[in-house]
Image (cartoon, rainbow, N blue to C red; front, side, top):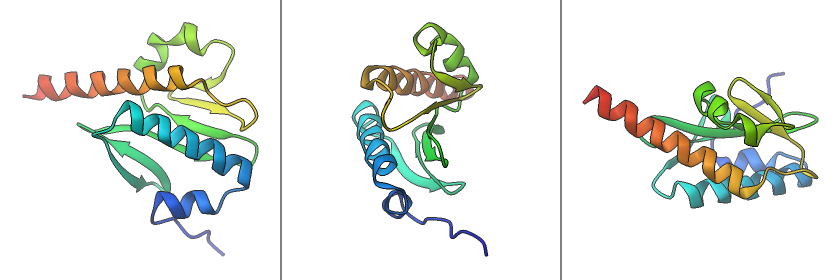
Length: 124
């Protein structure tokens, strides 16, 4: 039987175990503070934000939470800060007991905002 796709961030979070829900609710608040004009929506079954295009999103798996930066260029530009974390091309994975530092999340979101603004300006 297929797992129902959540229609809202609230329903996505409500389906998670308490520790993951709390960690992702905190991550969500940090993202909102860093990008207060961003629109929040659910895309591909996970909570996401957009401003001048796709911005960032987050999700959860059985053994970790994920912050989807959605930009290999931003990940590369912040490689020193991301050293020692569980990362892939556009994703930072973490656990509720080892959350991402708020300042790092803020810098990554702000870098994505700048990247999106620059892309929009190039397109005219």
